[in-house]
Image (tube, rainbow, N blue to C red; front, top):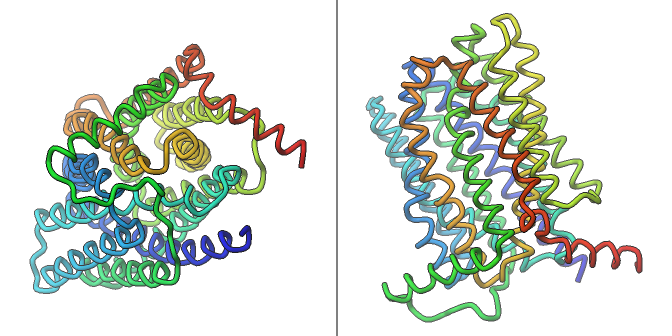
Length: 417
């Protein structure tokens, strides 16, 4: 049994790594293209909204169908849809239509496909591996994502230097094809209590309510969602401004932009590696709280750096990558442990939607923030807010008690073994 699930993950991880690598390269190439062509914070913000809003709007509905459909087929069709949209957009650019609206449209369509793919992948993990291995698997997933974040920007910068944006987009199609191919060799079981009947509008609404109740009936989980949503609200505008901080404040170019993406990926690689090799004794909630503080400090200090402090900015970015990696893995593992697998697609989709929709408001104001407050001050203010979220989290008893019983049982089981 143990050999079986490990082999399955090896095949899945191989396909996902190549897909993530190509997506990372294409995403960074698009960022370079937008940053250099426009130099506008508003354009980058609108691109971020186009890549987030469709997924956030349809996420709760997608989650309902993910829990009803075969999850393997859902991932395959989602990747296929994204590939078709990317090919169509590449043909438009090849024909010479270099307009921003097409970039926004591409990002929006990719976002709609991701609304089905990402939650289906996360919801499949507990069905393939023992619960005691979920944090370790989440750590390895972070390693894969981190290596992609390291190599992807370098590949993207190289590609955009040699090819036009239309040809660069085709890299993503190749990655998606390999990911689909890897899934064809794997059997992913569906939950025993999976609903197989056709979903009417009334049933979809009822299933969404059930997914919401799965979270709200657990006070600790509700607080975890709340603080994560607040942190996401602060992180999104800062994430959009990273390229412009490199270009405008530190006077960097393509190399410096690539370097920042690479060191962020290295930080995520280190964080994922720590979780993949070691099993932390600390509570996952405590890890999340500390990572909020660490990430917030790295952003706040970055905003205070002088124009000649780029090397320190790179170091702080790497530290932020470590924090983000450990946070993501810990958060995902808590959800996988606390939520019934039959409702997990709904819960992951719902969280993403609830977290992203308020962030759109912050993204819409990104241009105003960059022009009137300043990019550096924005990093300092929002980074400080994230630190505050982490500190407040320690004072919330239901949140701090989340998962303690399971963690104690895991420790006792390890001692027995």
